[in-house]
Amino acid sequence: MPVLYLTQQGATLRREGEVFLVTKDDAELARIPAIKVEQVVVLGNINMTTPVITYMLQQGIDCVFCNSYGKYHGRLVSTASRFGRLRQLQLRAVSEPQSRLSIARQIVRGKMLNQRTLLMRYRREKAMASLDDTISGLEKALSDLSTANSIGSLFGIEGNASTLYFQAFKGLLQRDMGFTGRRRRPPPDPVNSLLSFGYTLLVYNIESAVYTVGLDPYQGFLHSAEYSRPSLVLDLMEEFRPIIVDSLVLRIVNTGVLTETDFERPAGEDKTMVLTQAGIKKFVEQYEKRVQTEIHHPQMRNRVSYRRCFELQARRLASVLQHPEASYQPFVVR
Image (tube, rainbow, N blue to C red; front, side):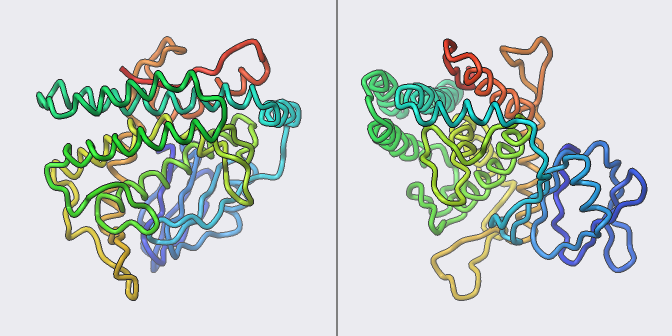
């Protein structure tokens, strides 16, 4: 259990030696060896004792806080830092226009390649000839990347490609559940709600990997630095969106793992759709299975989980920053 998700409202996380205990009303809900926990995600009204907080700080266990619907509030991290030199190199690369553009271009390329792969899989497995035009459109967008001479032009190409992609995405849903296209603020239907919540969980995972490697999460290449926005995390998650979240949402909607009964509209927000508590538990379980899936990684001899791939990708970027003659290569699947 690399990630411990706390979802039971009113529960308390305690420490008993080298064991984490989750309790509520004097009843023990779970007992987890602390050595197996790499991250704790707190969803809603969960209590934590001081010994638990101190232990996590000492052991470098990342802890994310959000509300019961998954909205991010903040995180608990140790203030110790041994990565000053790496962050200097990162800031230098972000400040140098050509270095920034080169890395940003590869990030967009990785995202679009993985979007194309997802569509090609459905085209092959479901004999969906209707996807041919979208796949051709993504290939055209990929070829256009080489001529992009600014971050703005990269965003333009990526935005047009994503519009094509999500138009095709709708056709992959066996139950559209009101989905007409990607809408995020706020998500108006169950599918958009799942995509947004999935991307939120992915942000937590990528941010943890970025902190682990020692990069500055706020200095991005594709996404510019803005107050309190983890721009580098948003960069690195781009290439993982289609293969982690998009593919998962398609599967759980098409197989009926989640249905309309797993969603609700918060009081006073008739244009917003969110997961119920039961729906959150179902989705988190499916998300965890996805990121723990093991694959062959081009840099590793053994099979590794997608969660491990997050860290390996952050380390790949760190290596490029330390060796400017190297070119950043995004994580792509076949």
